[in-house]
Image 1 (cartoon, rainbow, N blue to C red):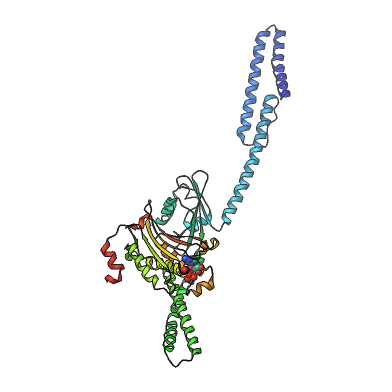
Image 2: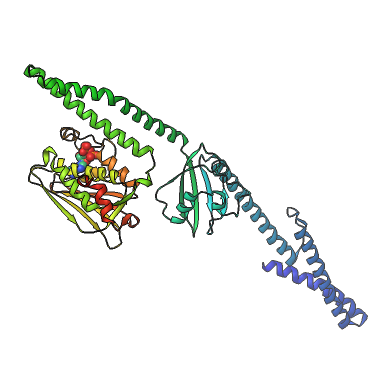
Length: 446
Ligand code: ADP
């Protein structure tokens, strides 16, 4: 750097000095000194003009050779140009990689800004969601995906579960949509094609439904004849035993088929809102207790009812009864003689309704709790069969509750007992119109 200033000083000295020297010879040193200074300024302006010309020319690869301060400035600028060229190339490479990567993604991906506007999307987003890579930029996503369920999902802010929708641009395509937040108020939306899975699932449901239906008639015949034959007094003891096993097993299959059909109906149909009405849960609990007492294992059990609220539930009465009754039957099945079963109904301070079945039974080890409501999941298969269980009861409960926007919560302690709680949202808790409900639910009044 010091060298540059010395060079510049030499240049100044050479211009101003030589002109002043001429002035000394001519006896006009002062004037020629001023002339020398002006010449130096003109030289500087000329160099500045050369620099600006080069700077603006775009031909940065060929810097002009200049000395002194201007030479140094050219050097610095040239180095900056080279650096930024490398940086640009690196960014271009990264961008190219990113574009190739996003094009290879099997899922549609859309990036949303703070106002839900599209800031970026990949090719699949156009195919699945109709979000055009260029034309959609800046548009609000709900303008493009104009589906009420999507709007509600986006506004809810709860993105823990994926949303299943039919593609807005192709009715045959089923999508699983997910949203994740990142940065400040930004979101990334991704959609996965679930069409194949949906088709398989529909086939499975149809298959289970058809098979169960087809099994019904033969089962009724087997059961009917085996029971009829059992009445024959001339039977040997051995034949009687064989026949009663046939009757027992066909009864078990009948229960299984009934449960499978119930589950199939719950899975394949939408809840029929026109059947929904205000249900008196307290009254339903009395009916459940009466039915539970008829269960073979119920004789040695104590049943307690705790109705802590006079409000009811806006629900499908038959579905609700079957779900609650499943819990009561389970409690009866898995509680040893001498135990107590409490049916409880209350509305909490937030207005949410809770129906609970508490037992003092064998309890369930914690590791089984998350999977308990899966189809055919049993803690002890042998024991469940021996008690006449199908392994489908809790799956039915869960489905019915989902249709009522409610959730099943299970807490249990081995050796102490379990609490099965059906938690209903505020929107389903209603004031009762007593007469109507009594007529509907109490068979005695019909
Ligand atoms: P199952 O027909 O076998 O009773 P469910 O789906 O109703 O099928 O229940 C699944 C499993 O959960 C049962 O096999 C049993 O192991 C367990 N279970 C359900 N309710 C209770 C309960 N009240 N106490 C202990 N275990 C229970």
